[in-house]
Image (tube, rainbow, N blue to C red; front, side):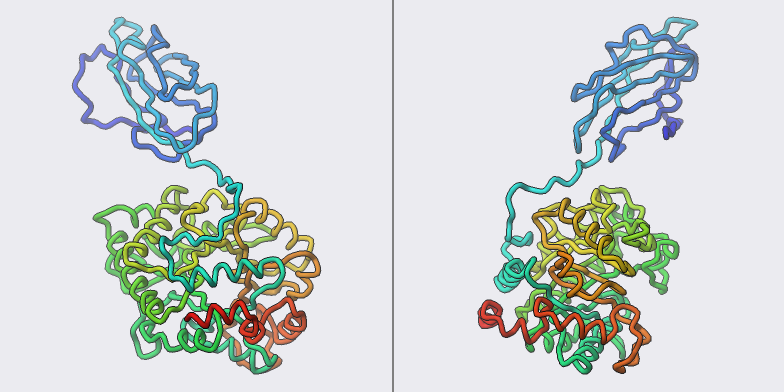
Length: 457
């Protein structure tokens, strides 16, 4: 759909008979313009005549068809443009004239940039973390996970609030096994420190790591509902914050972003000082498009962002953490399959994840997994969140093996054996753990390769 944008009132003063542009379908500074053939419209104040179509050019060169009709000039690109490239559309002086007076137009230059290209997996697999000069134990853990990928899966459980081990303890109490990965969340950053929550007290995380487990931390990033508000949300419809404004200096969102990044980096450095690597999963579900099979919530404040803005926010976080010296992260980007164009790039991502719920048929899970493997043959794929899926042994038998999986916590969990957990019941856990390919914390800590990593802790 073409949208004509009116010109500003402060255009240079010209002879009234000279053709004056009043609106155009693309403006200087436009970003993420599709590379597909474009029809660009320019409206003049009065009826015009095309006298020199060769004076209408696109640089870098793309063949054009130029047609004048009444007060409208139509410029049609005849071939695709290049991805992520700055173009200049030049309507040269004298390209058109006022039909009544023959007075020529003034030169008009429109500069825009095309969209970033689709993700193309590299030909060779790399097992090097994206973070420059990463913490050695983080790199070793990442390599260890690669050694298991496709042959075994690491079990995980999510904290019931944000900073606890309640669900991990529940699984152990009723199955005899701890999961490997304890997944925490910085979601309530704005409430810390308080009597009920203090992210600066890393005792729960340190305890889990010291006992042989692995640590994952999500960031369901909550922001104020408006400038100066004490109400926080991650819901798109409850805040005026936008991703574009986060990246714009001078806005309250930009100040909030920098404050939050500073606090989170400080928290992560506390873990780094203890030599604890982290499976770091911020901004989950990317754009969360709805899909009958995969699902998707479409409610996070970062959904609906321009591709370049979403990637810019992720990369800003990555670069800022690098500047602060945060080196203990394994960066996990969460896709919902249809949002691959939002992938931040191989230089900023170590693993990809899915949030997958309520898929009963293995053929559907196989289809989803195959699509992810097609896009990311060079990345491990995990279940950052999951619920109400077939047991892991059934998934293995069907040829699906995630790097790790984390059933979502249930806020109503009374931690009894028979609790009807919304994501994974104790019976689900027992059946999954009965398969030796589904690793518990004790089975991982028994592996010589993992022992070697932890010995250097």
